[in-house]
Length: 370
Image (cartoon, one colour):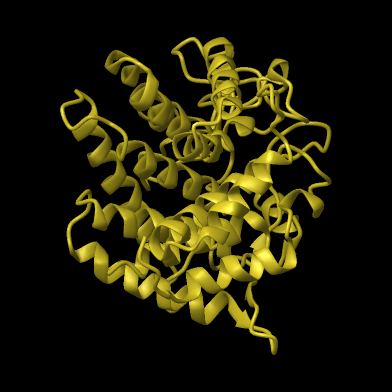
């Protein structure tokens, strides 16, 4: 590949590689953690753009820290049926296609096996985790579907795409607020969780990053879907509708998004980096692949400037920081996360959270396309 230099996307992955030579030696305490996959897909884009081997080597080193010669994945248990644990499989697919090493194919097949066995709602949508029964979370559409779609494209049969498109269509049906077009963070099919509306099953709020996961997952999945697939046009309409709903709650001044999307006027709410980067990635990639018209390119440029102005700082050593990331947010579980506005704004706000950093690399790389 021809070598060339790009801008903030490359500087951000260089910063990550300097600070965390091995991603698993950080705050996640050596877990098989889904956020590694977000960063490493960013590294993959930079590798493809620059031709620099060090970015591919970084992907490989991080996955080799978990995948042994037999294709077993350290710190992974299929029986947990955690959809988050599928996400790193996207990186393994790239490594297998590039190296042909059979251990990656074995690990990939193990993750595919999880999806074959994974518990589902009565309509056939994957539960978010076994410990969160009968629940659809927007986050899961990014974690599972692009891997599933790429696997089917490489190794499966075209009819299997029907199961993948169904995930998005049913998720949107069950989480959409018809007044705003926004998607609630989660849906409980049984309508019994303490965080849900007992009549609709919806969680209480529109969380920025959950919608960011959804739109990223949608554009990534569309890139693997055959042009002739029966649901393709429906998914393209869904992408535009959801992005338009997000545009409607965009902060007018900064052009980025709030932690709780539609409550920017409430005390304690804040402009949040990871969601803003994820939404930008979906817009920019959508424009590049022709899913969105050119008017969205203007939106993307405004958002990118807003992200840089609002969230990016540079240290005296030249390292790039992404500030104002929500560290984590969820629903239920042992922490009794109740889905209220007060809950979402109470979670820690940190610098350089991997989910946000990975999304920034992906978004900036799309914006820097020639």
